[in-house]
Each structure stands twice: as C-alpha cells, then as structure tokens.
Image 1 (tube, rainbow, N blue to C red):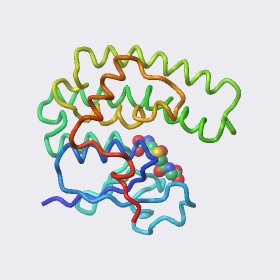
Image 2: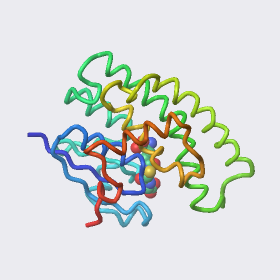
Image 3: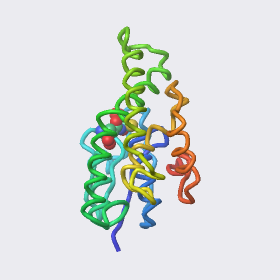
Image 4: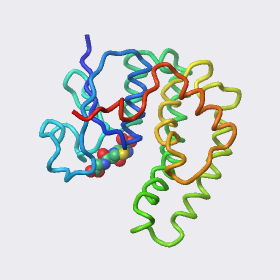
Length: 205
Ligand SMILES: N[C@@H](CCC(=O)N[C@@H](CS)C(=O)NCC(=O)O)C(=O)O
C-alpha cells in the first residue's frame, strides 16, 4: 500500500485543495499540521528537508516529496486513475481547469483574503480594486467552465473542483460575493459527504 503523508495548515487553501482530493479519493493518508504563520526555520526538520520553499502543501508519496498543489493534484489523478484521471479526456479537463485556476481565480482570491487580513497594509494603492476587477471577470468564466455541471468534471467532482474549491470556500473572507452559479456549486461541494472544515482537515497536533 502507498504511504501518503500531507503537510498542511487550515489557513492554506492550497493545502485544502490536496486534502480534499485525498478525502474524495478514499486513499488512506495522514495529515501533519505545519505552522505557516511561524518562522519557517521553526518548522519540523523533515518538512524543511522535503519542501524547498518551506511551503505547504507538501505530499510525501512513499517518502518522496511532492510540492505545488496543482502538480500534486495531477500526480494523484494520473497515478491512481481517479478524480478525472480515469480517462485521457478527464485528465485533459483537469489540466485545463488547474491552469485556469492558478492563473485566475486562484490568484486573486488569496490576495484579496490576505489584503483583508492585513487591512490593506503593504498592498500598493489600487491593488485591491484591480484584484476585485479580475475576480469579477473570473466569475463570468467560472459559469462558462461549469456549464451544465453539476461539477467542473461533470457528474462527479474531480481535481479541477478541488483546485477551484481551495479559495472559493473563503469568498466572505476575501470580501467578495458569489454569483448564483457559484453559490449553487459551492452548496454542492459543501454537501459532499467527504467534505470537512479546514480545521478538521488539518487538526493541530
Ligand atoms: N504555488 C504553491 C503555493 C503554496 C503556498 O503559497 N503556501 C503557503 C500557504 S497558502 C505557505 O506555505 N506559506 C508559508 C510560508 O511561505 O512561509 C502551491 O500551489 O502549492
């Protein structure tokens, strides 16, 4: 059996993407809480040895470190043939969704959330407005990509749904509102039996 160990933190949407994929996959795994707000040097030595930027998520697969949430999701889908990785078309769909997410909605939402947390401190004038405009454009693209749904991968959620969930779960914290299409998908995601709160995904040990 493959050993899967995920380093993450409940405030990291990137780590939540991978935790959700593991939960949906049904693959046995263990999550290890890493304090992303502490001095990186204080993080566990085995984590620092595995993650080149000392960032989460970092997924150990049989002792081999895997970083960058999108790359990890693609690895899981193709290695285990799940969450879109069952077919070449599903995998292509996953790749397209992940690239869109990383470049667009997964770029502006974490920044908007952070801007609210620090009350704009350190953000140049106009940055929040620019990010908000990008989010508004992303909302229209979200509807095009979801199409008839109910999930981005069709009848069942896949890696694309996990990636897009990562930060859309925190629209309130980012100070933006969901469109009706987005609200419907978020409700379906929340209703998944494998869904959990970020704190339950990464309990502090
Ligand atoms: N592009 C990376 C982003 C990872 C990232 O930014 N991780 C943040 C948490 S969301 C982190 O570990 N920050 C702690 C630090 O930089 O010290 C991915 O997709 O995995």
